[in-house]
Length: 435
Image (cartoon, rainbow, N blue to C red; front, top):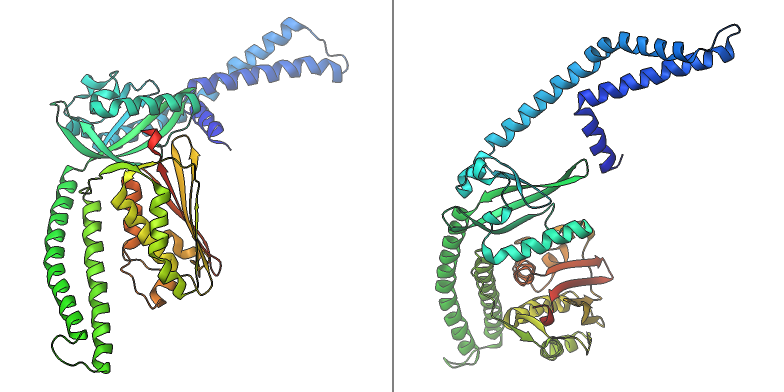
C-alpha cells in the first residue's frame, strides 16, 4: 500500500459518519440489484421498479440502526481516544511542537513552544511562521517553501537541523529542529519539533575553551621536547652513537604523533563548538590541488605511486576558506598515500556539477575499506581495520575534521570503497558564482 493509499484509508476510518453512509449506500444498491436480477432468474417473479426501490429503501432503514451500532459507535470511540491521546502527548511534550500549513501559517502551537518562544497559542494561530525566524533567514525559508510547493521536494524534511529562532522579546537563540510532512486530503502540513539548545551550546563553548587551554599547554612542552631530541640527534650536546640515533628518531616520531593528536583535538573542539570562523575567499582549486600533488610527490615516489591531477581547466573558483580547504586536502591525500600500495595510483579531480555546485573527488587504488566499516568512518576515534594495522598510526580524528570542514562550508562528503580495489572520497561544495 502506498503512502497516499494509507492516508486515504486513515481519513476514511477517522470519519465514522462518512463510512456509515457509504455502507448504507452499498446496502441499498445491493438490495436494488437483487430485486432487479430476481425476475430474471426466478420464474413468475414480477419486476416492478417502484417496488424494487421501496423494498431496498425499507431494508436499508431496517439495518441502519444495527450498522450505526456496529460501525459508528466503536469508530467514534476510537477516534475520541486517539485524539485525546495525541493532545496529551503534544501538550506534555518537553520539546516545542509546531504545525504549519503549506502557506506557512501556524495551525498548532503546543505549551512547550509557548515557553520556548514566549508567544501564547492564541497569539500564533493563523500567523506566519516567519514571526519565529530571524530576519536574515526569512528569505531562505521562503525559497524553500516555494520550492516545496512547486516540486514537492524539501532538503529539510526528515532531517534534524540546527538553526536560530526568534523569541517574542526579539532575542535570538540556537535551536535544533526536526521537520516532517503529512497530508490531510489534498492539503499538505508540516510539523516541526523544536528544542532550545542554548544551554548545550554554552556547555560546548566552555568545553572548547577548556580544550584549547589544555591543547596549548600540552603543545608547548611537546614542541620543546621535539627540538631537544633533534639537537641531540645532530650531536649538539656530544657524540651520539648509531643505536642512540635510532631511538632518538623513534622519540621524535612519537612526539610528532602527539603534536598531531593535540592539533586535531584542538581543531575538532573548535568545530564542534562552532568557533571555526571561515575566512572565505575565491580559491583557485586547480592551483591548490597542484600544490598538494607537488608536496606529496616525494612520498609518492618512495612507493612508486602515480599522482594525477584531473581538475577541469574550466572549473570556476570556489568560495571557501583556503586554509581549511588546504587542511581538507592534506588529510585526504595523506590517507590515500598511507593506504595505497606500491605502484598504485591516486587521482584528485574536480568538475562543475551544476551552476552552483562543484564535485571534488580523491580516488586511490589502495586496500579499500570493508563495507561494514564505512558507516563509522566519520565518527570520532574510529579507525578502519586497515588503519589499525598500518605502520603509520593516525589519531582517528582526521576524517571527522574533514566532514566538519565540508559541512561548515555548506557541503557534503561521502565515500565509496571496495576492499582490494581502492576508495573514492567525494565532496560537493558551492562554487564562487553561487554567492
